[in-house]
Image (tube, rainbow, N blue to C red; front, top):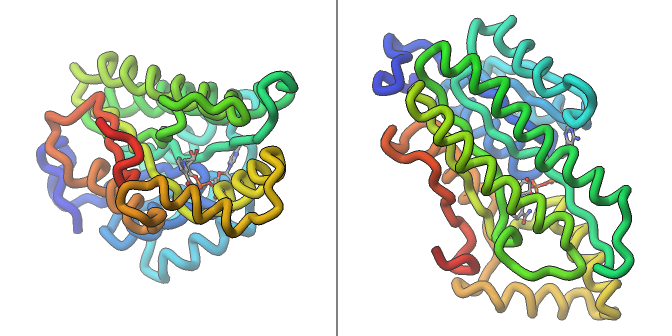
Amino acid sequence: MVETDEDGRGGGAAPRALITGAGGGLGRQVAIDLAARGVSVALADLNAKGVEETAALCGPNASTLAIIGDLAAGDAPEAAVDTVVAHWGGIDILVNNAGYGGIERFLEMTAALWDRTFSINVKALALLTAAAGRVMAGQGSGRIINLTSPASRMALPNYTAYAASKAAVDSITRAAAVALAPSGVRVNSVAPGMMDTEMQRSTEEKLAAIEGRNDVAAFLDERTRRVPVGRRAEIGEVAAVVVWLALDAPSYITAERLNASGGLDKD
Ligand SMILES: NC(=O)c1ccc[n+]([C@@H]2O[C@H](COP(=O)([O-])OP(=O)(O)OC[C@H]3O[C@@H](n4cnc5c(N)ncnc54)[C@H](O)[C@@H]3O)[C@@H](O)[C@H]2O)c1
């Protein structure tokens, strides 16, 4: 059982987490690793089958809750937090991991891609942070972890909406950390390097196509060689950073943007 005395939830009670985008990729691994530490995990995703698989992977002793639907729609962010509170009486950890990214040339950008990207990466993340933040502030404790990206600080003309959405995540992380600091709630972010997830695979294939490259394997190798440690990130090593911020990091750490990018991002 995880001890979280410093954050006011002593006595061995299981912390309660909401993980968005838990139907696959990084969110799935974070859910599995938090569940292994005794955390009750609410798994929110569009993908019902993916959530079912994640719940099974969390093991028979895990306490899981499925929240299926589009988090960018209507009052879905508030409803997701309400569901967690209705089931477990509160919320201790929010991992804002659900994300979307699309490739298009800068001069051919579309309103549709900006809307889709910002509605989940930015609007839903901000509203989830505020909804969970209200409950956590009432409890006097809680931890929020946002997934950002090295892209937020790069010039990426074929990936501008995504990069800009992650710059917005950095801005929201700072504002939320300051808004919630007096209430005992900590807000930090993680910037993962390239992990071989569904999102990353489809993005890089489209990027290769738009850059006129037929040799996708060589294109991927070149991108890997740009990472100073010389390899892509294991999903598990990024999940470990999220879990550390959620359960183990000293409570004085807030408003931090933690790089887990093998040296791609430098500070
Ligand atoms: N993969 C990488 O290399 C990488 C690098 C940097 C940052 N990130 C960030 O890490 C996070 C996780 O990335 P991933 O690679 O695991 O992505 P992924 O595409 O494999 O998984 C994202 C999950 O979010 C869900 N989702 C998307 N839109 C949703 C919506 N509107 N409502 C509910 N669920 C929704 C998807 O169904 C999916 O299960 C993202 O925020 C991403 O931007 C990833």
